[in-house]
Length: 263
Image (tube, rainbow, N blue to C red; front, side):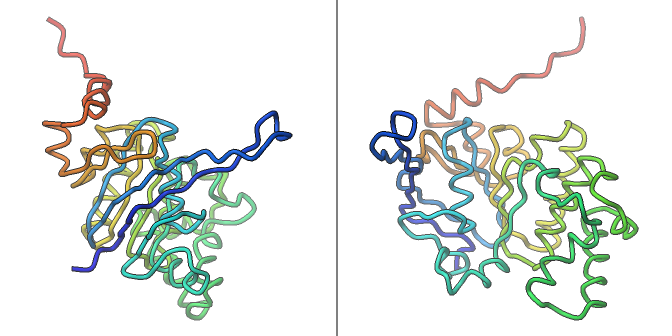
């Protein structure tokens, strides 16, 4: 079966200058030979501490930054100019801060319709029907299309962001810390929405998080990243129940346990 996402020896780095920008150029490696695959309809979690390269890997998968190695989305190479329009249909993103992802000048319906307008997909009436369908799919009443961003709660904003990602009917979603800015109850609702979308639409997903418990709840497979390398990957039950890498064990030990009932 053709993989939805296939990464082979993906590496990249950022170029900085020493001495406050006056010195020589220095390349700082961020990703170091990443191999990762996602099958159609599979949710894979990418977990690791802040600064290990998780978001950079997501940006490479989205074609937002340059990299070396190979990234294929449904067999099509990511990052080539001729493929950018098709890639926008195949892979979309949901980011951490929904307030920063939405234009406060426009109503939610206009924001949702924008990907279809840019792609010149369908008539105006067809696009508006699609907006209503997507709003219901993400758990919002179609009347929400007439609300501006400041009239929405943070959880509702994130549902709109998820709706925007779904508008072009992608096969893969990159969710980068998509619940870390939400409170616990709203974050749980968004996780359940991701699970429902995975079941009903067959969406593949790369779920990026620093929280191993969230990843274990949502994902069937987990990859653990440290210092730009994947140190361990496997089925969620194996990673959570019997980790092999010392770093994975340390991550699990850092997860706080809920206190028991009072004696």
